[in-house]
Image (cartoon, rainbow, N blue to C red; front, top):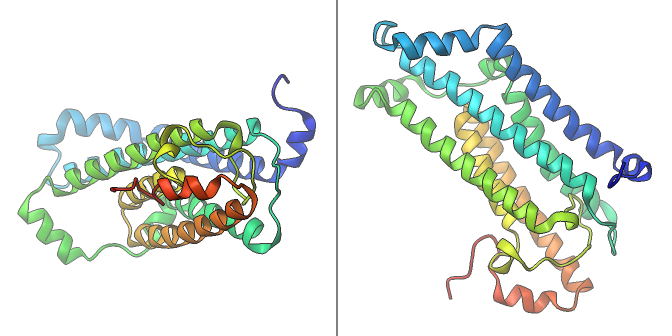
Length: 261
């Protein structure tokens, strides 16, 4: 192994195992839905015979397509996190205590676990659904409402995923889930924003929360935002104590979005 030592694999065994499992589970259920349960055949049929398949065909097609895209986006993001763990630098200041070790991991594991479960059709079907009366009203206003909503959510999720990739590329070997100090990154999106990865994750999670098709997805999104903001504040306090140039970096950058002035 040229860039991954056995020592690193042992030290990072838990997160690598977790994200490897997440990617495997999502990939399996996507494959099962498309090829073992006939999802691909259903999509092909509805695309070819949508006009004669009945009034619910467009809604069913939208749900199926958005589930596929939602799962693909989630798989790509989790796979990138897995890869980042393999190549990152050793920390110069390690995480200590609950708020720097356990809590940052929880901000990732809780949403990732939640949305991984939402990617399983049987689990998603058993969760609370949106109010049928309001859905019926929206459908009467325009039959394309659900498709349009899902397309917008897909675009939002894709933008968030793309920004996450860019942020991780800027971090490269400085990536960490726990609150650890490696190298202060001030390039790429970090030139204007102190926490572009967290901002990107919030955008990404909002998209997949809408695509999940259940209010539980939005509840998970609200929880994820609150946890990420607290995590960022904890991280900033450690950087201010450890890295002298961080104060100047903080003064010229925005928290989760660029400074307007």
